[in-house]
Image (cartoon, rainbow, N blue to C red; front, side, top):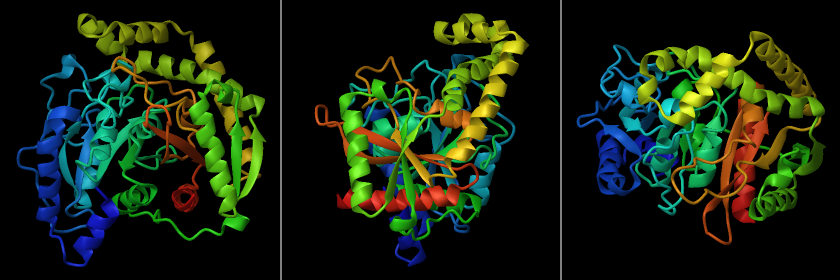
Amino acid sequence: MSLTALVAAREAGRAKPEHMVALARDAVARRDGEIRAFCHVDPEPAVSAEGPLAGVAIGVKDIFDTFDMPTTYGSPVYANHHPMTDSAIVALARRRGGTILGKTVTTEFAYFEAGPTVNPHNHAHTPGGSSSGSAAAVAAGMIPAAIGSQTGGSVVRPASFCGVAGYKPSFRLLPITGMKHFSPSLDTVGLFAATVSDVALFAHLLTGRPLNPEPVEPTSTRIGIYFCGELETADAEMQRALEQAAEAATAAGFRLVAINEPEENARARAAHSTVQNFEAGMSCGPDLALFEDQLSEKLKSTLREGLAIPPSVYDDARRAAKRGRGATRKLFEEVDVLLTPSAPGAAPHGLSSTGDPRFNKLWTLMGTPTINLPFFKDRRSGLPLGIQAVGRFGQDLRLLSVARALEQAFEAA
């Protein structure tokens, strides 16, 4: 469901906001029984006739508070939880005229315990996590836009598995107040839509910031292929997709540069889990103390581990992250955008695993903007393979502009 086409039809007077929302409601009624992307659908969603997002039906990851719908954080502990107010990102979407159609499935506390959502391309495969419902709802054509979050790789990875565009902005470009925090220095609000053009338009209309892509001159744009220590762990089909992306970018006239991973970045990636788990122990430790018998073993183990991390070890990890950010800034003196795999491969078989964030967590820790480019396929399974584009911190418009140009180059290849 193309957000760009819907907004263009509305602006031309060919579609009214109530009809746009009705289209999404009908799609949810027809498809969600099999996809199970929504944990709650508003039976009578408010439709605004005003605002840049008027008529845009939005799915919101059930990690964000909503005053008029249950907010369960993917846990039975909060089965009957009804917040008094909206989270800041939901309130922003409403002010801009968007219709919150429902809450999308998340993993427990946005960690690794999988929910019921299936991959729209093959129901025997995971849609990823923890923004599983948001990615799958867009991929299944039920809604044109969705809101998720990323602490490790929970926007880019499910976008890759489901074959849609997932955009993780620069840290705190979007407000995080009113979400269930797991790791406050990492938790980042992200967006989903069908294509790069669509998700950039969503970001532009949602924030009022100049994020709609601008024309790019390929010959003056430097694309770095990022050779990190994890690259050899990607499967053969993902490595082939990265090669195809490089070939298509070269054919389109972009200047390609091989970038070897700085040692500071490798150390920062290794520090991510320490930062995440220490903060998770602080943020969700009260849940462990009160509701231990209702939490999954996977979550309990991580929270206990986090609570056992000495502050000095956490501080060392934060210093490693700071050194990594310095090295990352230097990288973007050489290139405009980096390309890496979005995930080790296509969506794994089975619904118990949500996949591995090894290619995402460094950039979450760095706070840099990233986006999944959903234009490749695994030849064996036919499942989507995504390429992750990474931009300089604060240069989101530049990243989105180059990503759209790459999207066009991949389509033409």
